[in-house]
Length: 154
Image 1 (tube, helix red, strand yellow):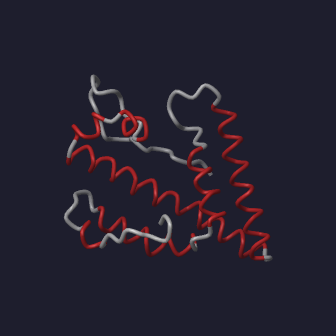
Image 2: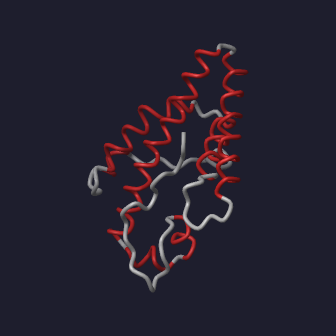
């Protein structure tokens, strides 16, 4: 959403895509979105947890990245404790949120594979997509397997 405008895409439009993407989106919307509650603080912390991924290739300071990710996980726990005022409830919510990142990882990997399968040339022409999808340059062979493996660590 931007400036009170939004785009609506019907979930049924995804049913013709390969790799069961329709079902994965349904799981995402039913299980994950309800846990996120459109709380911008939670969304920002989850984004940081995903971005500070110590399992990304070619990292020179993997331990520093892991410490940053763990710091954001701790901040998420503290925020939920302040919000819910109950340690049991906040801990359960935090675990559900971190578990939901697994569903997001699976969905992202299938989406990348579909993008590569549907129009590989479009992906190969855009350096930003190559970097976001963690793919080799156009001159190298693009292999969709294990593209988004290990997005986060518990």
